[in-house]
Length: 470
Ligand SMILES: Cc1cc2nc3c(=O)[nH]c(=O)nc-3n(C[C@H](O)[C@H](O)[C@H](O)COP(=O)(O)OP(=O)(O)OC[C@H]3O[C@@H](n4cnc5c(N)ncnc54)[C@H](O)[C@@H]3O)c2cc1C
Image 1 (cartoon, helix red, strand yellow):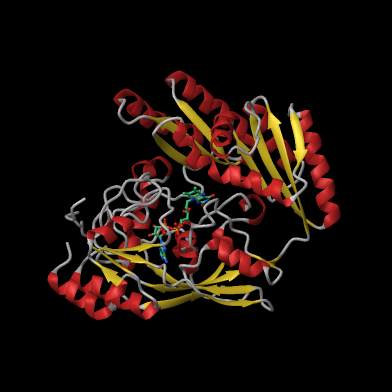
Image 2: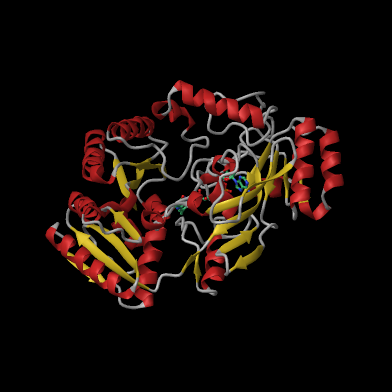
């Protein structure tokens, strides 16, 4: 709970239109895509880094939690104020400050929507590759904090690979500039990399310098339908083995395909699984790779292999792909959504193992995702009102993680740990590594005010009690 003094100081720091203690506003900043809302005590809308500094400094002195927030599309509860406190929404800090075409660098505020940066860069013939499927809503700040990936990560890497430098307000309220806007730079520890993926627990990003690429000359979009999921998975492994790195290589199982077709109605087949594959680059290379991919799909038992020949067809396919997550609620009202990664050569074993878990437990598990980099979104569907089914879904989650780790994989490729995965942290990380992470957290955030209750199941530093009414 905020003290009266803290409230008074917040009112002194921000104009009345840029903060709120009203329940109807707080409700709008209580949730993310996990749909497990917790009310904050206040929400603030800073317009400049200096205002962020003032808010964090006050939080440090008064000892209340501050929670950075982008668009609230996170899948692990990262921006949910589980310990109450003040949500710092970056929606007003949404300027693209500069696109430096000579040096291939964009300088942006954290509230810029990823898609908008991509459009602005494309207008100058430039390319910002990270493309979380939520790109039309999610923000650069949220992408940096989660080290977001997306379909293009298979060829172009993830957000981390594009962050050159950052301006960050650290938990003691000072502002620091880290990294360098040059193509290279090795002065001191790589603190930029530490902040990327730290889920808003080590500081608030107030400005970012991002690497851009030239736009690829040409591209092709291929859509292949397979009667059996394991054959689609085998095609993925074969494509990579053939030394082809597509710009996207997405897999969608039959459950997901059926659901999204019922939801979006774009004319997808009613049965089978599909691969959505894109190649980009120089014109000749693209033709050659598209032909090779077509051949591999046929050899791995594809029922059909088609190419999207116009912009509308490509747009429709991506519309369907982006709608899968939401469309799955047609099957069951609740889902556990995991984003595991395995070595690409183990995808067949992974999907077979998941099919076995689903069959044994009588659960529906829908799989889709960025198969090209081994990153599969596993959606365990259940109805929380059916207690046995809900318990079975929880146990299935543990089994999926065990399977993933046994194949040499990792339990999160891009969604982070947040609150939903913190209890599984020690399945993957040793006590020594968790201890090292806690020491870093306590050094940078001695009062534990920066997004508390995330990543570490038992918390780090002072424990805030959640007192706000929910
Ligand atoms: C339909 C759908 C599809 C998705 N597809 C993908 C995908 O393909 N790939 C992928 O990686 N993710 C995906 N996601 C998850 C989500 O969109 C990403 O994690 C995204 O990066 C979150 O951005 P956001 O702006 O919504 O951040 P939020 O959800 O608001 O916050 C996420 C985390 O970032 C922190 N944060 C936000 N802003 C700042 C800041 N300025 N400084 C410090 N910390 C900050 C928050 O505290 C929180 O911990 C998807 C989500 C949905 C709903």
